[in-house]
Length: 248
Image (cartoon, rainbow, N blue to C red; front, side, top):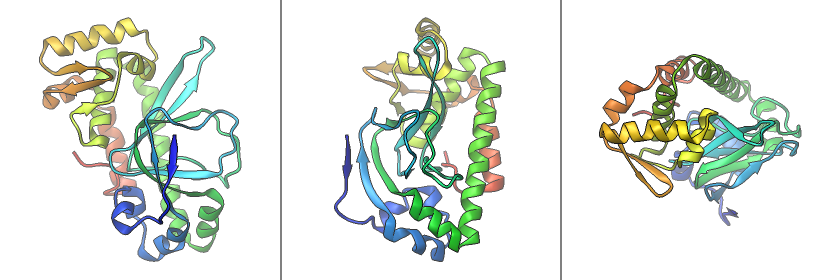
C-alpha cells in the first residue's frame, strides 16, 4: 500500500535522498513544489511491465527498490538495488513510456515522488539539472553492466556476500530484509544453493537468520567473501557523482 502524505516534504526529509541533496539550490527550487512524500511498504509494486511510467520515485533514508526481470520459467530475477543514491521512473526518457520490468519496494519506508512531466519541464529549464540526471543514468548503467559481469564470472558465495553488503550499505543496518527465496531470486539460482551458502556463513559466524531477514555479525569477514563488484560501482559513482553513493 502507498500512502500519500498530506504535506509537502521538508528539507530534512529531502536530505534523506542523496541524489536530491546533490542538486544545486536553484535546481532544487525548480522541482521542490512538485515533490510529495509517500510511505511505501515492502513488496509494494511501483511498476509492472507495460505500465505507463508517469512518476519518478526517490528512495529516502534506508528505503530500497529493486528491479525484477521475468523469466520463461515464471521466476523473477532481481538485477539491481536502488537506494538513497538514486531514483526510478523516467530518469532519462521523456516519460510516458512502458516499463520494461517490475519495480518493487524491497525495504519499505519513505520516498519522495513527483510527476515525470514536471521533472522534464524542470530539466528543460536547467542544463545543470539535465546534467545531474544524465550522470546518474550513467552510474545506473554502470551498475547494470557490473551486475551482468558479476553473474557471469563470480561464485554464488561471492555474489551472495556482495548482495548482502550492498543492502547493508543502503539501509545502514546489520539486519538485512532478505529471505532465502528472495536471495535466490536475486542470484538467479535455486533456493538450495543459497541455503547452503547461508549455512556456511552461519557456521563461520558471519551472520544469523531471523524470520524474513539476515543478521550480519561480522561485516569485515562478509566483505572479504564478496567479489569486488560493489567497489567498482562505488568508484564509478565517486568519479561521476561524488558523495552520492552511501558511505559505509
